[in-house]
Image (cartoon, rainbow, N blue to C red):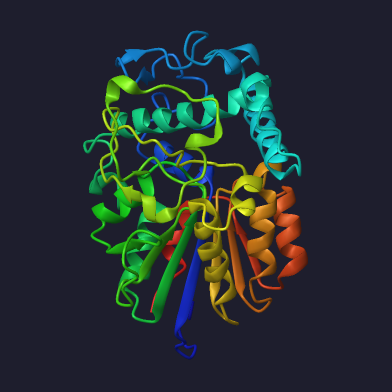
Length: 354
């Protein structure tokens, strides 16, 4: 971004967000006691089962494979993260396999757990979305927040021609923040990409707001341990602005295995991943990229690396993460000369002007 006395240059901004962005928001609005985004099993016993609205989605009754692997509401953060990583990794390897063992999905604990996990996470984040009501997520709480200030400044800055936001988060907190700030945006793959819309959102890992256009009876909800619900074409999906427990989708719209999306050209996630890469490829020297709250874990590393290697080396890179010694920082510093690291999002509201 130009500073005082410098020549004004038109720029594009690419923002790539991970779970740390949503954690930062929850901390900002003082809701971390209610919404645990670090241990995703911590509130599993509170999440309703959609068919009956009875709490206890994460249970031996509802998710027997996850339960067998040790998923419990009271396990440690490290143990919870390990189970999720193992489950998704196993699903990815199975999808990449040439022999693609479909029968294993009915018998293998990890593959059965994957089918349970994707639905559990969807309804966990719907549960969290309902907990964060409009009294908590309001303009008074968002305006002092660094990311809130940043979005407002970028929207108002005439020298910023485009803001592409690639978010790997399943929640819709970003969309709700932009709505509060009165910032118009489109979600690529769903909304018409109007040239006048400065903010473009891309969600390659899916969202609780994605669902099949056809609705299904709530009472028929169940976890299916086969491939019928995996994949699906993007044109078969719509955005539900107010996702709830009453609207049932027959298509998995979150974290499909990377191998599954690459094997089928038109799977929704594969299309959205291509949009994310295009957003990186179109950046030029002096454009800027802001990485916020990325964990750079084994499950996501391949996708993030693809973004990195497709960004022009002359692009200015900013990373917002409390951890300054992580592997991601080392990788970024080895690829780009203009790399700045911030440990707190508070500073974001003061680095763009003019």
